Length: 254
Image (cartoon, rainbow, N blue to C red):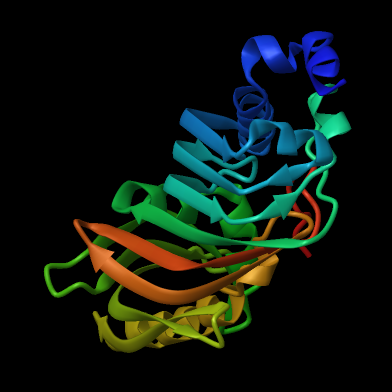
């Protein structure tokens, strides 16, 4: 009976694991505006387990990923162990989980990713909520680099909207994780004249309050970071993703 069923579907000809891998990979890639490379591999032994929606493991690797809000990711890796899916949904190009699951993840952000992301409308709108001396701020030519001392350096030319004054901000900071979900700038060294330093301090406090991973997670997911490394001019996060449902699109920012 199983052979008859498999023979009447693409399952046998294409290979069930390859079929599921292709659909899941395409579904994840669709969550991003653009991806340079996407690889998805579903493991099931025997492969007929997939008919009951049982998967032994799932690996996903994406490179050069651009989110719809403009944020960039150099590398994203997801590794899941046993997971249950609705196999019937695969045939209409959808991924539906039969129960919540957890994945190990690795995310790499290059200097270019960090700079591009900081200059997006998405991030600038959040930064505009900060006021200095009662004036709103406009960030220009923000650049983020990683120093040989493995610190993050941020330089930006900030305009006070009402007065039109331009203040160059320049500071270096180590990057830490609090409560597994809050990215924080710590041990900050501010540069420049007194006014620039005061504005720089206000900016660090504001950004530290913004960098909560729950504000950036896709719908139906929860991200947690266990370890952070700076290596090869990149910021690397290791952690986990709780996936309650397969996301259908980006999570709307508050």
